[in-house]
Amino acid sequence: MRNSDDFLGRLGVDTALHSKIVESIEQNFRAAILSQTNRPRRMAYFDGVLLRAHRERVEEIAGLRAAGSKFIGTFCIYVPEEIVLALGAVPQALCGGTALPIPYAERTFPRDICPLVKSTLGLAFSGSCPYSPIEDLAVGETTCDAKKKSWDVLGEEGGLHVLELPQKKGEGNLELWRREVEAFKTRLEELTGGVLTRERLSAAVRLMNRKRKALAVLHDFRRLENPPVSGRDVLVVTQGALLDDPERFTANLEALNDELRDRAAAGVGPGRDGATRLMVSGCPSVMGNWKLHHVIETSGGLVVCDETCTGTRYFTNAVEERDGDLAAQLAAIADRYFKIDCSCFTPNDERLASVVDLARRYRAAGVIHYVLQYCHTYHIEAIRAAAALKSAGIPSLKIETDYSEEDVGQLRTRVEAFLEGIRA
Image (cartoon, rainbow, N blue to C red):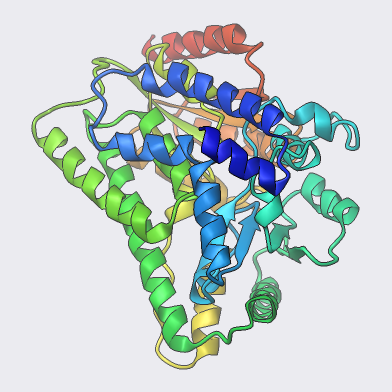
């Protein structure tokens, strides 16, 4: 670790605080993830993706920049990764999932905003984010008020580009989004000095579609009566999808899927006979945040589906590979990303139908609405989601929490009571 810390120090990172944050993440990872027994052997690669994310991955990206690539930091799965990859740049999620940096954000921002936003900003403000010094462009979007007003404070000059995501899904809204994707393409061409071609974009589309297909195969194993992998391990893989080189990630995921196929055929699972199948719906759980899944799966439950941005939303729907010119392929990319079911849309009947459909397809006995504190869109939409699930005969429970460990006991009590109610 010493060489990595020396490298980060030369970048200007506060290595003392950074090491404290990484140690906290690793401690939580050991308790929530590595404490499991009978894990798939190939999960070791994905454990490494997360554990190397704040050190070795930073050095790798810095090396790619030295060779001429640009580094694009993202905050949301609405950023079209195909365009970034086709222009020879490196996309990487920058979202924070740990509580330690939050006080640094609260010196500037209100306390009563989403912990994901505060954790992300706190990493940057405290000088402990190892990616900030090597970032060529950060890409924000308008999915929530906290983010939108944060971009105003940070300013769009130089290193920030904001994608405007419409709040409705009509034809006119789709046209606006297509123009936003075109403008993003132009911004990246200016940044990289390259020109997007149909051939390079098509190759990036094929790579990302392959990645999505591998993730879909992984999640399909969870539909089995005895899934060969735990919900926590699937979460680790999906978190890694936002942090790793896509081609390397996909090759390792395809190898993991081969192992899971063998485990399923042999009837080998995570070793929780009689566990109650649950779906988690709502806010994402980015790297550093395994709290709710750990509580569920150590309280008699098994997470068999994640209707979140670190779950089905990330890989659902492939980009249509369209014949024709570059504009047609760009429109296909825009159309695919516009289908993502975020709670920012209104009306949002598509997401409500998706929640019920996923719960049925993964045979979840109940659904937990996961709400990060002060995330108003998911919090309020949970009302209609609960009603839709109730009409379908599926019980649900709303959990509102943050990144601290202080409420773990309370969460466990509520989850256990929910599971007892389902079994009764």
